[in-house]
Image (tube, rainbow, N blue to C red; front, side, top):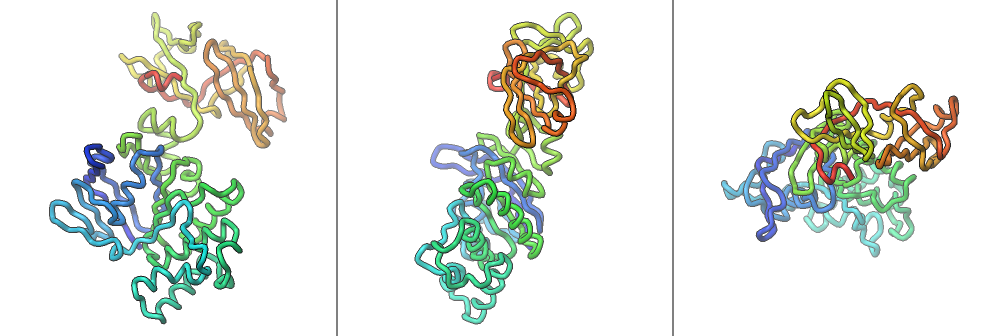
Amino acid sequence: MASVKFENITINYGKKNIIKNLSMDIRENEIMGLVGPSGCGKTTLIRALCGFIKPVTGNIYLNDHLVYSQEKRINIPPEKRGIGVVFQDYAVWPHLSVWENVVYPMKKHKVPKDEIQKRATYALEQVRMTGYERHMPSQLSGGQQQRVAIARALVSSDELIILDEPITNLDAKLREKMIIEIQMIQKKIGTTIIYITHDQETALKLCNRISIMEPDGTLVQIGTGEEITKTPKNRFVFTFIGVTNFIPIIEKNGSWYFNVDDEIEFSHNMPAGYLKGKKNVMGIRPTDIMFDESSKIKGKIAHSVFLGDQYDYFVQLGSKELRIQRNSFDIASGREYNEGDIVGLSFLHPYYFEDTKEASL
């Protein structure tokens, strides 16, 4: 299976810098999520990996084989890099049958007929589309078309496949199903997968590791979903992975206060993680704010929403509205909370970041 190494990659479009000095290793037999907001350079980086664009500086390796180097004047053409790609819209040709869609790349590259038959049959078996060879795309569901696109990528490479936002257009239930199917395919054949998305929830469910890019193209953190969620490297990562609350903090006379028009004291001691000498904001997940009748910090429930397995409460704390999430089964076994109720609040696992206008919105 394929490993990938980006080494000091810089990519410009004209005079605009998209990616600067990016380095990253992708291990064999893993699903690596490449996550970031639209326009941060995710697809640009992958286009460089595929050989469609040339970085200004840096090296790209596939299985320790140098496929691109500006300095050494090496640039292996795309068709010889052996990378399978599945796009957001699947790019399944509507006028070709399932079989014709899958074998098309091999015919184009003049693969021998016996090898075409063998590889296409194998690929369709892996994605559980055997028996659909003569079907046209219009006869298939969205999930089946997705599997055809993956089969076509597999015949191009069973070592490295790039999935570029492949399930964005599917409904919620089908997205969940396709996440499981992609995992099953990957485990069965061991393919290394790079999964490009701006959807952090899908990345957390699907990927072994996640690399997060900031809007300016900086690769800010790589780790497992648990590592990134529990130990975010900066405020952007904390904000991007999951729903967040930010509360401005001030220190006054040896105590710490929520600065929410009213100054509400919450600690007599410097909080763990507080950035001394800087203007701070507390970052707190909705699941880490507890209703606590013994707490002196009081808020008012302005609005509540029932979402089946959980309640979302919007609680007014001074001028700040906090989003709090509680498991509906836990709530059912205790006190009911209604709009207009005054509730005590306690805060578990807070994070502290340097305060900016963006953080305190």
